[in-house]
Length: 76
Image (cartoon, rainbow, N blue to C red; front, side):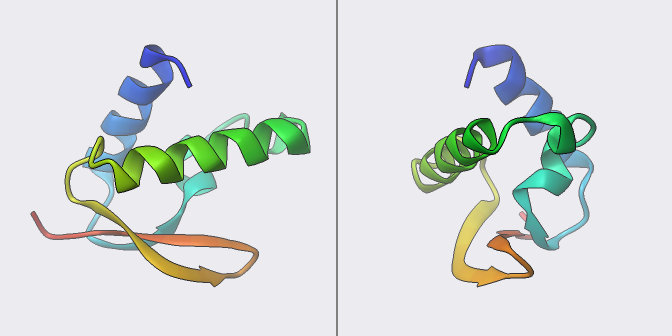
């Protein structure tokens, strides 16, 4: 995941209200056009970056629901 995509995701995350979400909701337009392998790679990278604290206020819930991992934006 390049720096430009990380910055785009940061902007999208800042606009989201607190609560749970799936990564494709943050990725936005173009997600459905990606190859499955690219989706898996991006999802894994996002998970690692969340766990490393790269996106402040975003946490991994440790749950999967509706076909994907759930993340949570806190009120911070």
